Image: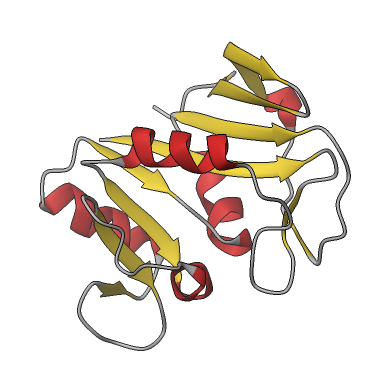
Length: 155
């Protein structure tokens, strides 16, 4: 099973502000949908609650939460086990902060939207770009889409 972290961040690692995204990039939302459609998406409860439409249409959504319920898992490890048991060949890790930071060492690939600014944010992720190799970049005005693979594979 391929584990893909999909994240948008600014130059300081900012990913959130007041429970939402601190920028509006329609192209990023379109790319997120195109990449994740038909796949399993794993996210934390706060990220799930911030979605305008729940669950994500056309995708299996697993939510990491302490509160039991349908489509809820107690940990990232449990969510990955459920996804594997259900036969998903690719899973996308969709946030938030603690889920991303736990998933980076497990990831086979990172699909990164790099916002080329610093934003007024209150949520930041620790991400070390020196541990990754860029395999693709699509440059746009003010942001780029990057595909990264780890320098050291997880296998």
